[in-house]
Every structure is written in C-alpha cells, then in structure tokens.
Image (cartoon, rainbow, N blue to C red):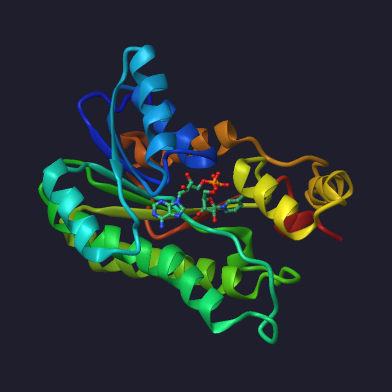
Length: 254
Ligand SMILES: NC(=O)c1ccc[n+]([C@@H]2O[C@H](COP(=O)([O-])OP(=O)(O)OC[C@H]3O[C@@H](n4cnc5c(N)ncnc54)[C@H](O)[C@@H]3O)[C@@H](O)[C@H]2O)c1
C-alpha cells in the first residue's frame, strides 16, 4: 500500500521541517522528488539524504513568490503527478501591529507562492494519470490564535484555495486537499520562538507544547504520514477537504 513508484512529486519548502519529512518519505515510497527551495543548501542536504537511501531527488533553488522563476523550474521538471504546496513563513502580530511590509511578505510567500506553484503545475498535472495536490494550511485557518493575524489570513487563503481548486479540476481528475497541523516541532517553531521570545525559549516551548491537549507538539514525520495517504492512490475518493493533525487542538481545547 501507499506506493508512489513511478510518480513525480514536487515539494515546495522541502529543505526543512515538514517538507523535508514529506520529501524523504515520498522518495522512500518510490517517487522521484523535486524540492523547490529558497535555501539551496538545505534542499541539497535533503537531496543527499534521499540519494544515500537510494531514492531519487533533485533540488531547485527558487523563491516561490517569483512567478517567472517558478514557471521556469516547472518547465525544467516537465512532468508532475503530485504537488505539495508546503513552503511557508511565520509571523507574529495583530492587525494593529503588523506592518504593511510584513503583511505583503507573508502574503507573497504563503499565498502567492502557493498560487504560483498551482499556476505552473496544473497544466502538467492534467497530463498525469493520478494527479494530486496537497496544500499545507494550519489550524490557524479555522481557529482564532493570539498574535497570528497575517499568518492566519494566509492559511485561511490556503484553506479556501484548496476547495476552489478541487472543484475547478474535478473533471481533470485532479484531487486537491489540505492538511492543518497544530504546532509541529520544526526549525520554523524554534526560529520564531528565538526571534520573538528571546530569553524565554524554554518557557514558551513548554507553553506551545501544552497548547495541544495531547501535551506535546507534533512530529514532522507524523504530518508526512498523513501527506503520504492523501497523495497516494488509496485516498482516491478524497478531494476538497482539510485534514487537521492537531493533538486535539481544535475539538478538545476546553
Ligand atoms: N511547524 C508548525 O508548527 C506548523 C504548523 C502549521 C502549519 N505549518 C506550515 O507547514 C509548512 C512547513 O512548515 P515547517 O514548520 O516545516 O517550516 P520550516 O521553516 O522548517 O520549513 C519551511 C521551508 O520553506 C522554505 N521557504 C520559505 N520561504 C520560501 C520561499 N519564498 N520559497 C521557497 N521556499 C521557501 C524554507 O527555506 C524552509 O526550508 C509551512 O507552510 C507552515 O506554515 C507549520
């Protein structure tokens, strides 16, 4: 079950955290993995790890917010069965404290970046026998989280985009779903804790762990396992849905 043998998977932000875990698992299941990454060095490290385990992978240095560059990379890749729109950045702030520059930056990477990859990949996905798109949303798309104004806006857009794409490409056989993780322990989380809560790292880490009723953060590999299911042919009856992976965050926090 869950074989991706013969499939070509493109994963944005596959150099770190959740995207890296997805890239490694998809390659293990037989996919040829293309990683689209801002951080070329991180992409290369994932590629080397995959190749050392006899998998197929290639890194592409690219900022997903640059449409021409994204189009160029997909043109080079040539054929796509699976697109995982995972690249994203965090931001802390409320509507009244988020600068225009920060708002535009979060929008450019998290929203326009996903659109750019969709725009470039859809013509190629239409040629695939079992095309599938997976978008990385967040519980912030559907729950009001303190100090996450721009980030929540961007993930709400991903949540809505998923349904729109799933609807529009039903006849082309393209399935499209999203995953909404609660806190997952990745460099993304460590990065925003050290940037925004310097000196209180341990305390904030503990607080963020406990905000999941299960009492801990998720692991990137746990998200990758759900991603594999949603991108494999076994989930062929699933489209237009969002899947929380949240340690009980949405329904058990009372
Ligand atoms: N970690 C969490 O708690 C959590 C929770 C919910 C949702 N998410 C979402 O999951 C996704 C992955 O998060 P993560 O925790 O693995 O993050 P991460 O920071 O560990 O990895 C993100 C990767 O995306 C790349 N990236 C950033 N901007 C880019 C750009 N403009 N172009 C190309 N690549 C770019 C980074 O270089 C990095 O390698 C993000 O969309 C994030 O919003 C994460």
